[in-house]
Image (cartoon, rainbow, N blue to C red; front, side, top):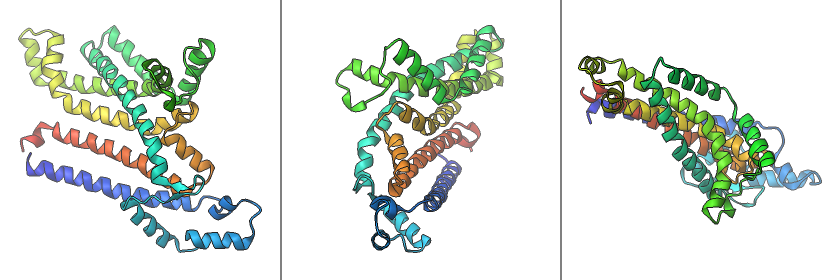
Length: 318
């Protein structure tokens, strides 16, 4: 790996760290200006002003915002995410029980969506301009425009209410057999896959078509090679970098969609925990969950950027 590539990757990494620092400031500022008072929320409406003031002093809410931010940031860097006020337990311990469920949901979604999206994207590229390409392009464009909450609502209405094939609620802790696993994850995964597959297929098609338009693909056509062989043997290996970039960017969309899906299906993950925390005004938990989602999103974008850099032949040979 050349020094120039290392320099470009280092710049992307530094930009990601700087972005995460700015995000932490924004998250802290937004949670700090939320209406209401955490001490009042904990003690209830019948608490006296003296009790509220004493708790505010204990929680450090009377300190200047910059001091509270630096304390929170230092705790974040040391792994101390604070105490959940509504659950009366450390935030780290609370999130550990939910993080595995969310990662499992994301993993199953990726395992299902990536092969289907690659198959659709490569097929559309090979048949570009034909009926298959037009049908797939129209279908993926239509799926991208459909929001998750509508897909989830229709899925519940059809498969849970009408057909009674699956449960409308997904309890990940009750899984004891492969059949229970399928019943639990089918509707949430199907909802998330709808948009992700469409996005990934369109980006994969564009990456393969770009390679099929290159001079070496044209030379292969002049030699009499078939379209399928040119696409699979010559174009696809050179499109691995852009396709990896497309996969990483598409999967980053999971961090937005999982909030809606977990809430609708009552799935016990990090996103539903964050929604409950917002409802209970559990500031420490809201901040920790939001930082986790932003970190995951930036990590996937960083992977996409690095994939794009490594797949650029001009940079590799520089």
